[in-house]
Amino acid sequence: MKLSYYLFNENVNKFENLILPNKVNKDNNFIELQPSNKDLDFEFKVYIQRNRTKEPKWIAFLEDDLEIPNREQIRNSVNSFVILVKIYKNDLPYFFAITGGFGFTAINRNNLENGFGLKVALNSIDSRELKSFDVRNIDLKTKQKRVLINKGSELGEFDLDFEQDLINLVSGKTANETIGTSIKGSTSSLNLNSDVKFSSLGDKCSQLLDLFLSEDYKEDFGFIDNVNIVKDPDVLSKLTQDLFETLRNRETDHISLTYPDMIEYEKCSSYQIKKGYKLVETEEIVLNDLYTLLDTFEFESPDIIKKIKIIGFDESGTPTTSSVTLNHFIVYQTTIEGDTYIFSLNNWYKIDNDYYNRVHAEIMGVSLLKNENFLTGIHVGESEGSYNERQNSEYFICLDKKNFQIPHSRSKIEICDLLSRDHHFVCVKKETRSATLSHLFAQGSVSMKLLREILEYKQAIITNMKEKFPEYDFHEDNFPYNECTLVYAISTSKSEDIREVLPFFSKVNLLNHINFIKRLGIKVSLYKIPVLPN
Image 1 (cartoon, rainbow, N blue to C red):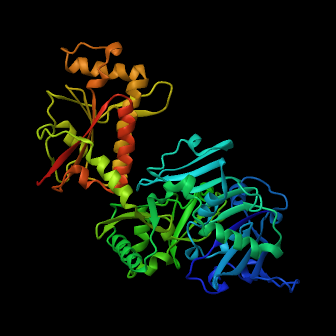
Image 2: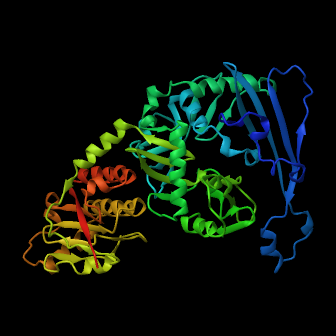
Image 3: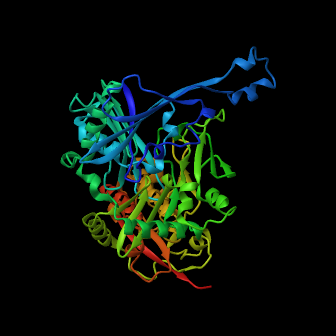
């Protein structure tokens, strides 16, 4: 039988902490079942939701112009269950929830032991029988993706970059059939197909707890420890306060919102961000909508973060996600006392010092374009377009906003912002916001890839060069790739080396793009644009 398992953290000390009372009640057709077997050796509570019905929203779309026979009989019906289990290990209590149907919408996600499902899966999965991965990149502009192979495979076949990707989900076959057959583990839940009966759920939860506490995963999946979950309560208190101040000040640097997973939220067409009766309706969850909601009440303490809830709806207006609190959506980076932390997937992660030092060392090895007169400074408030247009026209071709239509595609791309006489492909970006820098880095690497792969793209560059600099004599057969340099030109008012100023998110992302461009046989440099007072 395939069931979903959840483990709760040490904040839970009774069954009532596991569920949402506004969900598990008679109004929502939930009833508690009583045991018929008095000999079960574990503590539990079981709730089922029977025949909860609701009129589909699409009825209103049809009924104005169409006759609908027996309209009152068209109802969506839901049946679900939630099993709560308490077991002991070394005299300590551990609480689990096991759900079916839409039962997952009734559990209190703020008390979940994040990382449970993922760690159990990695500790029990056959490393030769991996089926899929969900990953998200370490960046504020979050990209989540699923890589699925139709036949069990080894890790290397998934072509993932674990230097910049956090694993959100893994699935495959178990190495030991006493655990189950197929397994899927995410940061919050575990989906397990196993031959289990209700009477043995206590033993099954004990088995899963042992797997959660095991470190066997390190042999094949040790890279997940590049970032480590923060447990120290004093550090967590400082980090939580830091995040609260960022939200209260309505900051947009180093913070963004993204979906907690790809399973529930891929079905959503609209959302509500709400606190009590105050709400904002939106088609996409973004910071501006959150800040619009925060403007409607006193945001006076970090505790309120967990009182702001987000619900996803399908096209019929039916909730397709549980009411999940804001903290599950936030991605944030900060530095406290010299250490770098990331808040993602409702966890605070500390960047492993060895990992951080390695990334920093690689970034400091990236070439700088040190010619102070290569580009002028940018004025406070000046647009990128205005800035690009006033660069030295005898040395640069301004290609800003002059998009190239990729053949046999609907896509257009900007070759670069400025193309120099000496084959510098310059991509310009104001300030060092991680969310905008990710677009800059991708722009550069995609452009260089097209230069290598698409003849028409290369011909367009040659045409521009020859029109501006007619003395140059080259064509597509002798294009000087080895003389080309992709320049990421980034403005900052800070006095430090631009490589020092970049957020950690951006450093990891940048290294990925630089390594790709270098494999194309093209050089890469960074250039710091100073900010000038008006």
